Image 1: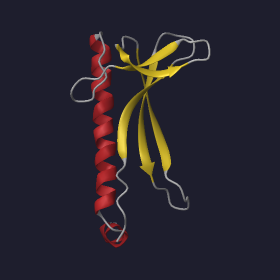
Image 2: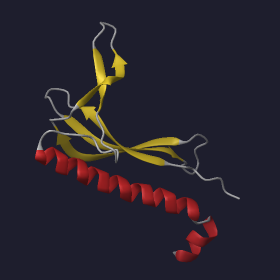
Image 3: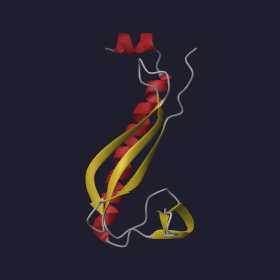
Length: 121
């Protein structure tokens, strides 16, 4: 019996170096890659940015050596990152749709055994 990976896909943000924008990407973990012993963290960049993210001041992401803090983005009840700008909200919805696709792929990959995959091909 193959153990289930329980891979979870999440939409995450990464700061653009020189502008006040954040790249959107989808992070999936744990992903078991053939030939590797340990699970991998797979990041898929979406080539989309958002600039009006609302930050949750109650949830610190990291504290730098000089004492400055960065915060995690606020998320709504569905786990979507909250933005003030309408275009950014649509971008977040797009990212979440891609995340749902990836999540379904990982979930289905767990359901089918290797022989069933071979038969399907």
